[in-house]
Length: 255
Length: 259
Image (cartoon, rainbow over all chains, first blue to last red; front, side, top):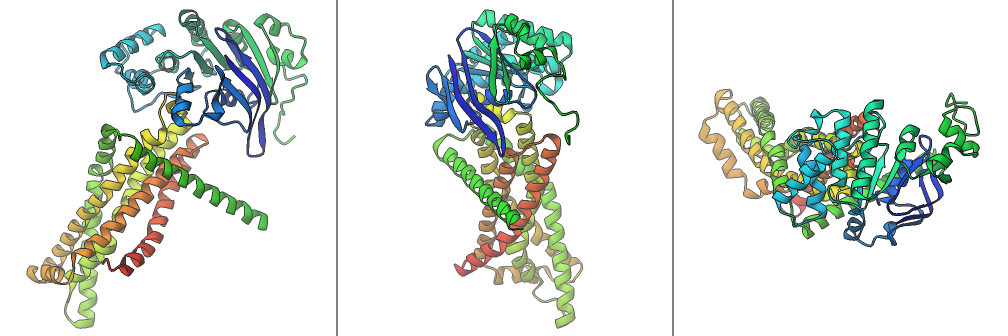
């Protein structure tokens, strides 16, 4: 279980998270929705220890990520996470196979090479790819990169999978395929998934719980059905995608 | 105005602090963990072997022009080209060999390290390394730093040789100096500590180039434009730092009687 308690984070004078509270129970898929620049990705990065909050606690199975005493301790917690980055973030100097094997080799040492190769091809199978181990990331399409990124994220068998805008930048059909993949992996691996997105179609399809973030705080949580029919004017405006409502986005930056 | 100065001051102090933390991290990684030899050799070949052609061309011409200018100048003053070998030898071994090689490597390798790490930073590959249990400073920084630190002095010694050979070509073919005179001018007047002087400086230059490029790369933000800025910054900062530190290093080494 992941618990965020009163987490604050700012960059320079910009306060991104202002006392964020969020509980993520095990075995669920929770989606965090919210506008651009409201701190969705920052929340994820704080969760896995890539960024340090100024205030508050981030408890992963009871251990505070922000207070990790040593690098080894931090890696210990991080090994519970698989992270699918927005642009997949594949290492372009390595082949697809080496990318997927990277986490296994570094997080779970002492696994013989033949076993690693077998895991790599299993995980690639799971995301619907096969025989691509020797390709370089530059030779893949956007959708394939996401699949490889996902295979890399699940390769070391993490307890939590973190998705940073998994469908952004993909065509609607590929996006839906990725959605199905997320649901499929959730079922097969029985993990806990944390998804950040502003794609409502995707959010409804994959989530058990949806949490909306606004001005650095969670303002509402609920099942997809509850969020869809929410009476909260902020949530209503966001899920219907309207420029009219309490959330003001300037038409021109100088206004 | 004072507000502006204060901000710049904070910025500089912050940068120096971050550089110090990164260098500490580098040394901690080198001392405490096994260096990945495969990565190290890949970088060593990129920094050392692949730099040979450009280092050869620059240093042979440096040696040639040095002999030419010395020969003509001394001909004007003394009516004959005296001590061409000595001047070429001293200049190349103490200054031009180490400094030119460092500057060529800063342009070639500093830029490519900064661009590579910068691109990895803006495409979140550095973050990805962290989430896969790998410290980027250890995985990317250490092999590059060590490769530069070991290869630049070797390149410098190579450049010294090529430069002196360039001087020999011009001295004998153009200035009509007998080969034996040129070599005796070098061997009789130059001690081994002159070579040591230059090589010691090249270790410091290597540390400057590698540290600057890695730091700037890891700090890159802002997409393609940011990568461009990082690359320029890595080259400009290293070159300026090489030339400034060269003066002080030379003064210190001479004070200690080396060269």
